Image (cartoon, helix red, strand yellow):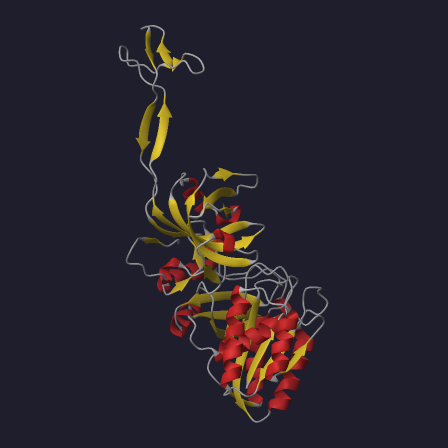
Length: 427
């Protein structure tokens, strides 16, 4: 039996992964857990998401499916943030996992939920078509993520990582978290690069501790079960109520869709697109850096390195017109929010200067619009400017935003192997 759950949290509290952790402890009364639970991140651009747009799935071997369905529904009713307008829980239960049609349809639905925009009706129609048991609350939007998480459990071919999540005692929810920062730094040093996004060393920030009033104390992301467990053992903190390790699509770039033409780009989707820098990067109000790129057909789109990307903006400002690049990121309001930047080739950086006087060697001044240049003391003139090539403080290679600005789904460059160019992971 597979159980998928989504949309039980809100910005005011709770976490769907916490509900999953509670159920993992309670459902063993009705059967045997199979493998590790799943934490599935869905399309990060969806405006209806509560926080991180995550759903969970649990698999069990059981002869008490009816009791499990009843128990899960009661737990959702008890723990979900029903009072929040955006919280619309959903649960899906898959009993026949051997039906190839069900596996194929749900596996496809999982990928679409990560990359595409799916309506509630589309999810409900598939649930009905496949004869699945499901329970939705309020507007039932959570059925989308719950169905996608079940599809992920049935579709084993996807890239995955792990996250160890420690949860707070109930009496401490909403209060300041107490985690020894030195122990976090030691855990990071001891396990990086097999764990990542624990600490942003460049910007001096602890990344693995959330700031919202939810039950999560900290989360360690990494390559294997052993890696995240090893790091978590080094962390000193307030008492931990419970912990769980999820297998997840975090850090996989599963949300990115390769496209050849900017004309094919749609809002609320995430893409990989190659193009040419079409204008000088400019810094706008708020510290955001914007520049246009065009594809080989001449179609343009603006790309942005927003203020939260911190030092990444310095890199973006070094781009010049005609640099050949590949950008990866999500599109909202007709702007691509950069997650990764690959510099394919660098255009010459030319600086235009007034000519120097051949007699005294000093810089000539303009003689007037369209009249060339002159040196008054020497009475010399010139009609040409100097074109001086300047060195580029930028290398061909792949760059990424820092850990403090990294999306859950974005693959950190320490997981990327490229033989054709350099890779520059951020630390």
